Length: 130
Image (cartoon, rainbow, N blue to C red; front, top):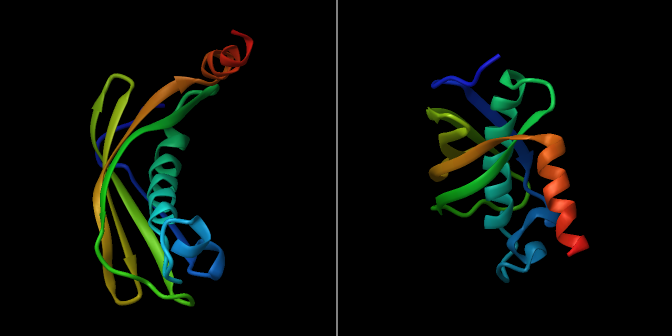
């Protein structure tokens, strides 16, 4: 399997009190929080890539450059879409965009790296030992 330019992904959720700016401590208003927008964009991205990886591989997000352009109130559906725009070895670049039922709410770019699960987790665990 291999990751190729053009792969697309999508993730969606409903805005509830649990994913507002207030809940994320990123603001005082009960609207869809930017940290949750970021997570939704990353979800769309990694899910589009995962089926094309070898067993024992995953991707990790390493960069996210987005704008959050429009507020979404509690009760509305939101979704994110991703598209792979560049593959350079283990580095994958994607464009990401998010929408609610009234139109676009955010956009940007995202970078992920392909990692070997065991090696990555071992390196992370080693931080606790030293």
